[in-house]
Amino acid sequence: MRVVSIVGARPQFVKLAPVSRAMRAASEEGEGAVEDVIVHTGQHYDTSMSDVFFDELQIPRPAVHLEIGSGSHGAQTGRMLEAVESTLLETSPDMVVVYGDTNSTAAGALAAAKLQIPIAHIEAGLRSFNRGMPEEINRVVADHVSDLLLAPTETAMENLRREDLVERSFNTGDVMLDAILFNSELAEQKSSILEEMKLAPGEYAVATLHRPVNTDEGNLIRVLDILAEVATEHTPIVFPAHPRTTAILNSGSTSWSAPDELMMTEPLGYLDMLKLLRHARLALTDSGGLQKEALFLATPCITLRDETEWPETIEAGGNVLTGSSRDKVLNAVETWLSSGSGPAVAADAGAAPFGDGTAARQIVSRILDQLGIENDLAPRWGQEK
Ligand code: UD1
Image 1 (tube, protein in one colour):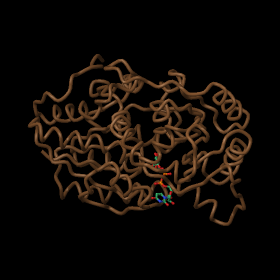
Image 2 (tube, protein in one colour):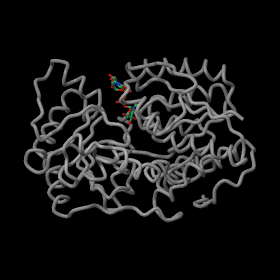
Image 3 (cartoon, helix red, strand yellow):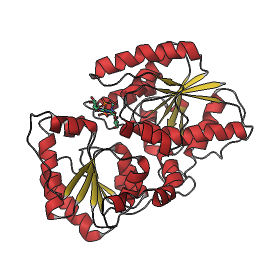
Image 4 (cartoon, protein in one colour):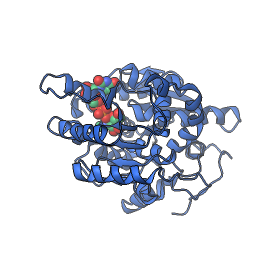
């Protein structure tokens, strides 16, 4: 049996790593020989956004690299659709797996659906209920054309139930929890980011921005000014800048420059980011992944958006939504800095909102089921629909 995983953007490499490892383990345990074929669309192409993740997360090299690169949403997705279709015709997979909510997810799912190849969507059922976000469109498209919907939380299951998709949905827990459990000690040992940046644990915050709502010209400077104020008045901030942000700042249309306390860096690798986040006083971000990683590592989080696909992080008391309101951000910073660390979510079997750290095995088990391969890979929980 051949399973093709389609990935292209940074967060997808993090999600792919545990799944690819679990597929290899299933074959080694004799639970079903699955040929794991990785197709990289090339949506993210800088070494710091792509290669470093394959190296650190020990993901096998992609069998096919489509080198699509940047473009407007329509152009980028259209080029991917055509190239993925050719690849699927050449590789004849038994199943296609797509991850998360990027343009690579939507293009991969659509190409497979039109060729009538069964599709599994990992991280199914997430909704921000904001159709202004390109990611929301990608999620809805991927969920509705997929055959197997692998949801990370009960909230995601509930969203799928509301859209009448629950019959093909399973709560497997979240692969990003698997990734953290596998890598956080490794990050402690291998990353020297604190020494390199001369940072003491607990004496800095970390920030990331990449959503168009915060990084597009017009909003970017306003949000950066807020970060600069937090950095100079409250706590120094390490700010690994997304290429989109750097490109706007270097375009010559703005003369903004960061104060010394707002330390802008290149995008960081996964292990450096985990170590940095674990020892930070606070995270400020518009990333979905970072909201959860902060919770798993007990670092309080401020989300620079008006809504989140991960309400569990707020219910657990580890995250607050501020949008890009200066007053709300400053209030949240003061509250977190006076209250110390955030709560960590324990990985209890079936009880924690993000599962028990075995999501990848559960996912592979469901994929094998779907392919008609009997297996005993994972105990099942969260099966009620
Ligand atoms: C994409 C995903 C988002 C995901 C994010 C993680 C979509 C719609 N969005 O957003 O869900 O959370 O990735 O980072 O798919 N660029 C480079 N080098 C790179 C990659 C990008 O310079 O390696 C620049 C390009 O100028 C590009 C811009 O960044 O135009 C944006 O990249 P793009 O792939 O369109 O989306 P992201 O903003 O990264």
